[in-house]
Image (cartoon, rainbow, N blue to C red; front, side, top):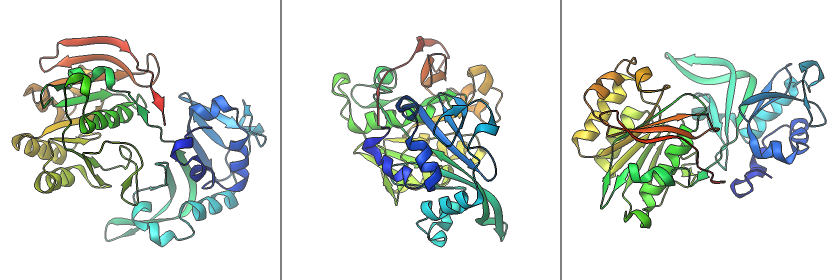
Length: 333
């Protein structure tokens, strides 16, 4: 059964009964590889597994035609909303306006429907028509083999940019890097440093009621659902981090905040969407950081050997210091 150590039952019992029974009937191998469960009113029930979309029948079997799949009802979606919000929509309004609710165990449920706008901002979502249950898995040890390129005895942490297309494991790798820097690595004579995570989309630490559901290390502090540019400055002022970790930079505000951190002597480890150096060189604001050699390391990911494949690690001059493809097998939690 997937995610037994991370409250798998919390995921099951957030699903409407009919859908829950279908998921329970899935083949064990499918459960181990399950990435998403998608519910849309009057549409076929779908799962995302091994980077592929599949239709599910009422008896928990994969079917080739949407006509053979179980059709999600409005009652299913109404019940799903009740379950994930514990029958109190107002208590989760701050999360819902961001388009998702995080469950205990780190599972995140995306929500679609009609947005209610107040003073130019989203207040809540009503007439909910669809859900995306994302199955979070922590891959302990995903970064072990590359940490020697990111940290250096006695306490140096290189400014690192992870470059990755969508669904190539960048957040999984980032999370494990945070854990290793925070806890230290005896085999590299690295004792560990204070880490601050700005988790704007609640995906790195997967906080539930402020408490990280993923292991991000015991010297790590997390600001959950906080805009990156605000959180970076808050952490610098209040938590004395050696390293700040965040995900998916791109806005000018993010870049300016990173400059503040670098000027304060704080190391930055972050990610950006892209295929390679040439690709991100075309991104506004990011190109200046590359031209100014503000990052010491570039980790480039792909799916050549599956999610989490490391194609290469480059130094600040864009010279390869590690060549892949390489993928670390690790313990899924």
